[in-house]
Amino acid sequence: MKDNGRGIEADVLRHLFEPYFQGTGSEQAMPRGLGLGLALAKAITERHGGAVTVHSDGRDLGSEFSVRLPLAAHVTVATPAVDSNRRRCT
Image (tube, rainbow, N blue to C red):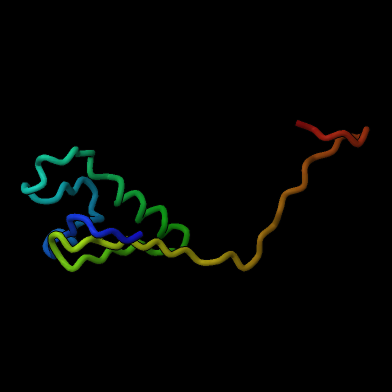
């Protein structure tokens, strides 16, 4: 996802995916969370063999976040269980 918003300064970019990271003091007017969202997104994506990246050319130049996940080589679809009367079990 790419935007043309506030952008992210270089000194913040390298810490952005760290748990509890809140950025610099210059964004105090912005609503704050716990600083866990991006760290969790990165951890979950990496557990699935993917990667999360961010790019920004600096303040007021927007930012771009990318999530890349591998394609599944083989997908197995589960078949619903059937009882002896050939009705679907729930």
